[in-house]
Image 1 (cartoon, rainbow, N blue to C red):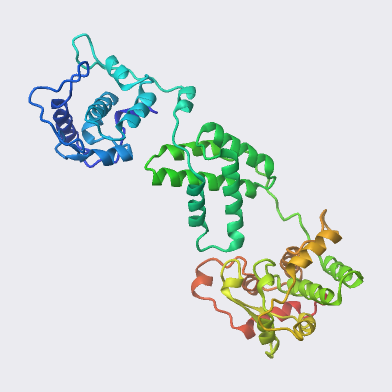
Image 2 (cartoon, rainbow, N blue to C red):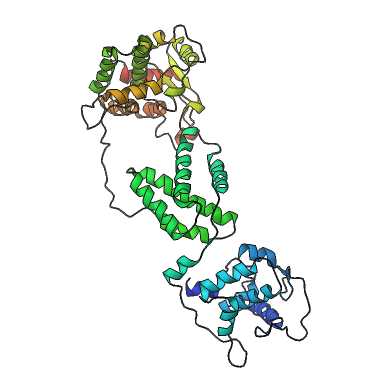
Length: 441
């Protein structure tokens, strides 16, 4: 700890004025015991150990022990802090013994408080000025703090998952499992280093690494606040991401073209192993995703037959996506291209309104098995490529930016979207069709 921190161990005090602090220290010196024999000074009265009677503030000692906060009258130097702790230990205040050991290990590096106190006395028994050395890295590592239980980790996980979607909570679940598996509830330099090394080796994606390490750092901060011990948060330094040269990419490396979408539809129609129901459903999913650019796992997966029937019944077919069906919780209208309407009518026949329209999970497994190559990049087609196609081909056909942002719910932050814009469904459809009317997949 730096010298400035030793001069003032706790900045959060009510009395910063030096004159008041001097009076408080003098009041405590009156009751200081002779550490050699454990005797009190003449005239010292017996007191309740729960109250710091020598201090005019009558500090609550138990609360200060729990928070590891020295009173103002013992903040002049480390020597005064040590004498105050020894006095409270003599009074039998619960928890002081553990705090005293931590204090001595941090500032004096002695075995116990009495040994440290002996260093502060000269031959006449008076306190001596002692130069306290900085703790070495090895000594810092030896300072142990209490670990955490699986129940505490699970409680924090439930707290973090409240009010967020299941998809967002998946990574929190993964991060909690990894944190427990790698640390076993231990909070130390070695445990944090093990967690960091495992995370960096397991994941190649930088966002995945950040999610796990940031969860662990947030949990340490949570422990520090709930246990009134800031040392937990200090271990976050061992969970930092490595410094690396940032490579700036001008555009995404994944390109999806009209030919790629048509190739997927061709694969669907020529796969004899697919039942007719799956063939119609897969083709409808590809066309809907390519023309509308909706997110597969938050929107496509949750659209119901009833919603689709309501949209198809309108003169200008527009699907109303509810807030809970969108990743960013934005209710919006999605125009349906005539090519989409054609297949959707077949898909709704003979089905209940509460049924989900698309078999997204079956389609995902089918694409994994087929490994359909993309023509302009090194990769195979996946469901999320449909959204990329809508965005990328929108640039080719001159899709109006505001209409595109609204339908894709992408880039809709700001005052204009939050307080001014509110497109009507018929206008959304008209602007959309100006760009997409002639595009036939």
